[in-house]
Image 1 (cartoon, rainbow, N blue to C red):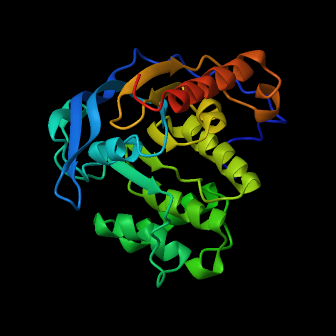
Image 2 (tube, helix red, strand yellow):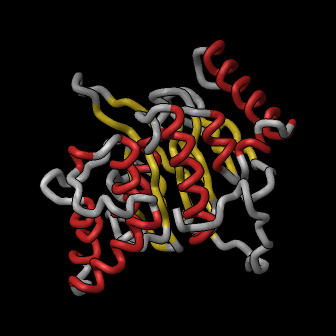
Length: 281
């Protein structure tokens, strides 16, 4: 990784003071109803309102089937809400756009294209000249730690390497928002930890707005500024937790920090409360 120096060996210097935060994503009283195969209405999301500031890292956490991914797809423009509205930078979302870059658990790489070809695809579709697109793509490939693998095909890569390619390909569009749906969920624990660290490095450099769906409490607390805890289906916002932990974050230090431990325990208890209730609070 060439994004930032190793967090374990160098002391970070404070960056310039950030300007007052502005809203990047505004979700206003969104509900979503799907029709089941039996032609019955299923309420997936109920009256969701949430504002996400520009440059914030926000995780959505909740039980399976609570509508986390559905909410992400609404922000991505892949699903239209049944009621309410979702906006990016004040504009109502009506379709997918290059300002929002999705990274999903399924890598969705083109199997017939090399690593370089996959990452170049976005810039070329946007009309960037081949030489410039290649230069940008090579820089991104190096940034995600895959220099030397430019001519490999997806079938020749591990799961973690494929996810690095998927992230580089999304970043090649220069999106203002990253929409990440359990991107590390299928990876082994060691690879998952490495990619979490890499993602934080990239976020520290660019400060893109990130909306991150996960089942992992530890992952949500480690990565996020805010954790949005959702109830069982139909999904409602149970609580928004501000994660007041220092940045840049070093996992070895956080594991010994009682504040980090308390966040993890308190949120785990929310999960237990939801499971014991078996219904929405």
